[in-house]
Picture 1 (cartoon, helix red, strand yellow):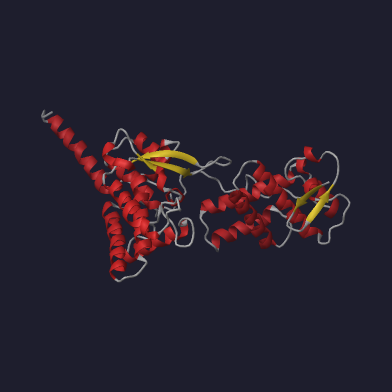
Picture 2: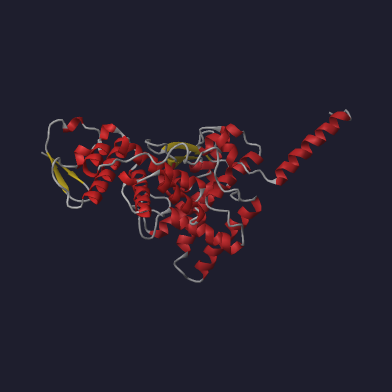
Length: 384
């Protein structure tokens, strides 16, 4: 005997060859010959459980499996019917609604389509026997509702909105100055909020100073910094070990080491680590950015804090937390750093990805053009 949990209840399974079934197979979740009290909903729930089991067996993160499951549930609620009655037309209506009414981003729609396609592929795979089970119970079977005809194509390397850009150097300085002023204002008024404000201001600076993504920044620990033997001037903060980089599907987070390149960065980290962070009384907390209510701050508070500063300064709404990373790449390229070095710093596998992040300013282009023109003129005059 073996017991398997579904959303409905515990079902008892007892037959030979159970260990030979693929993860998520119908036989693992349904009892042969036993009538279901609510067959449609119970079978749908068992399908979702089986699919989640298959996704986890493929080594995908549970968060990915949970997200895909929510997408499928949302589609089912929209069309008001079950997978064995779904059609491509129902899918088209849903995605048209998501684009025209809810105004979801193109990449989000494509991700939703991918989740629905994977679920239908799972149901229609003979190895899992869900189609046969539907045929036996309802006289019909699920089909693939996302095909080459109605699937959103991915034709561009970057699908970010055209308005997304890096901070200019002036904007970035104004942002950091404003964050520091908020700390000073709260501290002068005697409010306890100056410590979290100091933390948030420092986190924004370090995210830019090392070109970090949001989750990479929030997941930093105090022990992630180290010395760079080739850059002793940076002291204990010459190298940052990023342990929670963007993962590929089915793989653990990608790690990388990021070298400190600007002399102001170690001073900012050291002040936070040695003077301010200890005031929070979190000696047993390894997180570099501890939260008032938990182990570490979340991505949403970071987003809101930057948006608050941005709006107070009247900056473009397109500037977000990820713009700090865009700025890091852009400013290094503008300052003449080797593109391959920049690529390694931010953890891109391909140079083309790094080039997407590069938003060189008009001032940089003007200086480059002027340098080339001056060189051409000097050469023509024989001054070289």
